[in-house]
Picture 1 (tube, one colour):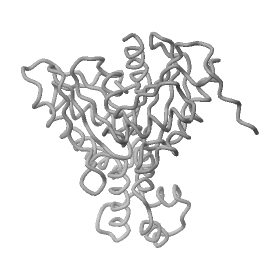
Picture 2 (cartoon, rainbow, N blue to C red):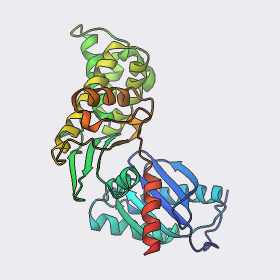
Picture 3 (cartoon, rainbow, N blue to C red):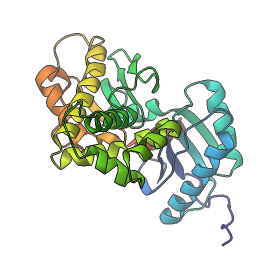
Picture 4 (cartoon, rainbow, N blue to C red):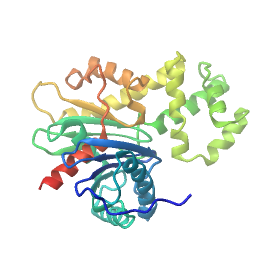
Length: 316
C-alpha cells in the first residue's frame, strides 16, 4: 500500500504535541489554542545515540494517523516534542532536524520529556511528578520555578520501583521459590506462560540474553498477579511503591512550609487502577501526607502538555 503524500497543511495553525517515550509514542493534534482535535499512539521513539532518523520515522507514522483522524494534512505548522533521551541540546537539535526533514511539521521544537509532563501536570506552577515505566524517576518544580530530580539513573544504578525493577524482583522470587528458599507462588508459572517457555531451565536460558526492556516487559504480569491476590506479587508491588515514595520524600525537601504539594504520576505502571498506583497513594497518605495523590488519580497527559507549550510558542 502506497503511503499518502505529505502536503503542506491547508490550515496554518495546526499544532502537534508529541511524547516520544521508550516504549510508547503519543501524538495529539491541536488547534492554535492548544485544544486537542485527535490523537494516535504507536511504539517507542525515545532518542538514542545516532537514532534520530529512526525516532523521526516512528513519529511520522503516528502523526500521519493522528492527522487523518483530525482531517488535516502534514506538515503541521508547529510540533512541540518531548523526548526521552533528549535532555541535552545536541540530541534535541538532531531529533528536531530529523522530524522536520521527515515532513512532520514546518517548525519543530524538541525538549526533554520531563518539561512537557510538568506542563501537563502543573502548568507553570509547583508540584512533584513521579514517573514509573521501564525506568523510574521523580521531578519537582519548586515555587521559585527551579527544577529538581531524584532517581532516573538507569537499571544498573537504580530505577527502583520501575518496570525493570519489578520484572527483576519477580524473576528472583520465582527462582528462590523454585529452590525452596522463599514462599511458593504462581509467579514462575505466570512468567513461563508470558514468555512462551516450558521449564525453569528455559527461563534461566532466557535471562542470559534478556535486555532490560525485555525484563521490564514482565512488569504488567506482576501487576496482574498482585491484582488477582498473589501475595508474593503484592509484596513486590508494595516494596516498589515504598521505593517511589522515597523519591518523593527527597524532593519534598525543596518545598518549605506545611502546605500540601500537588502531585501527579506518569508512565505505564501508574495508570489509573494500577495496583502500584493504589499502593503508592496509600504509602504517601500514611508517610508523606503533604504529597497525597487525589483519589481520582492524576495521570499526566503529556501530549496535551506539549500542545499547551506549542500554543504558547505560537502566541509569542
